[in-house]
Every structure is written in C-alpha cells, then in structure tokens.
Length: 252
Image 1 (cartoon, one colour):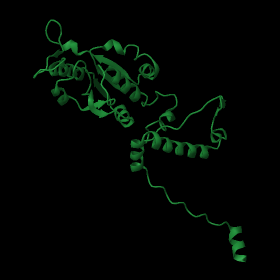
Image 2 (cartoon, helix red, strand yellow; image 1 turned 120 degrees about the horizontal axis):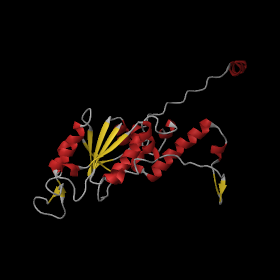
Image 3 (spheres, rainbow, N blue to C red; image 1 turned 90 degrees about the vertical axis):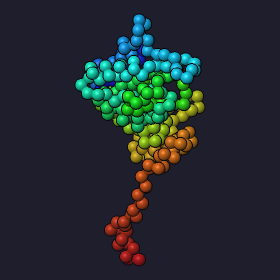
Image 4 (spheres, helix red, strand yellow; image 1 turned 30 degrees about the vertical axis):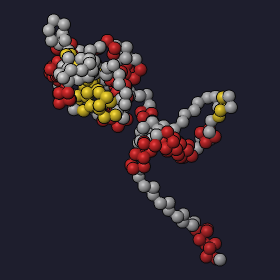
C-alpha cells in the first residue's frame, strides 16, 4: 500500500514513519509512506499557497490551483491515479469500516489543510472527505496520522497476531470486551472467575455478552446500529432422547 500525505509540514511525519506498526510496515515493504509539499507548486517569490477569501472574512484560504497541481504531480509520479481524501471537519466521520475500506486501496492521498480551510473547488478534485470528529484542529496532519495508523494495522502481516483485529472496539458495531492480566487481585479488584477457568465456550459467551452490555451502556448509537445488522438467532433444536431414555419411556 502507498500513502501520500499532501502537507505544508512534511517534517511532522519523520518520527511517526519510523516507529510502531507504521515503522514495521515500512520495514516489511507493506507500506510506502511519502509526503508532498504543495509549496513546491506555490506562486511567486515566496511560493504562496493561500490567499484572502472572496467576499471578505478572517484568515487565509488554501488555493485550488496550487493544491490541484500538487495532486496531479502525485498521480504523474505513480503508476495509476490515487484515491484522494480531503481531511476536513465537514467530512464523513472516520470509522473502523472507513479504515478497512482505505486499507484495500493501492494508493491513498491524504490532503491536509491549514489556515481557514480550502477553496471550495478543491472538493471537485478528491474522491471523499473524512473528519475525525466534531471538533476543529489547526491542520490535518494529526488526523492524517490517526488515519494512517488505524489503516496500516489492518494490512496483512503488520500485526504479530492477525486475530487481534477480529474483536476490537467498533468491530461489528460493538465495543471491545474488558481485558485482564496478572495480578489476579489488586487492591480489592479481581478478575472474573469465568476467565480463569479455561472453558473456551463459556469465555466466548461471557465476552460476547459483555461487548453487548458495554456498547448498550456507553454507546447507545452504536448499539442501535448493531441491532439493525445483528443476524436473527436460530431457534434452539429440541434434544432428541437417547435410546435408553426412549426405551424407559416406552416401558412406562
């Protein structure tokens, strides 16, 4: 997978690209992470990338011609056009399903804004818009890092145990079950007995129930979505009597 971040501050991604799962993915060759500075296509002596807004207003707006030139330069250097993502508070909320969808793309370009935002016409040159949530940051770089990390960890071979992604929070619209490790007792707080008994079916049932209860209590919006997609439970089949029971009933 290739990820290109269009940013005025490429130096922010230096250490980020070297550590944890991102660094591992790059070392393995699973991920190619690069940056593109729109100032390379800036105008005039000072390589300007922004201008005052038409109609007046505070702050500066990033120019559509400069950003489009940067995007086209990225495509020109690649084997095929990339999937372009604009990082903006007005975008669709980022989710686990968003990360999964991006992880299946060969090349993703994340466009980071600064100042008061983008010229509206930039939206015509991207494929989707993503937001981390209902808040505003100075730029899109932190959002880009969050999206990269949550996406890259889903790539094959990046996590040591691929099963780790199967029952995480937000997988299947449920939060993750609680986790415990040693010590078994700490300041009066213990570990549920079912987790120490080693009965795998009981543990699975306990964790499933806990995921549902925790999601219903903490994120009723997610729980409502879960109920909409939850497959109907199959009716339990009545147990057939064994031969000894059938013979005994016949004698009666």
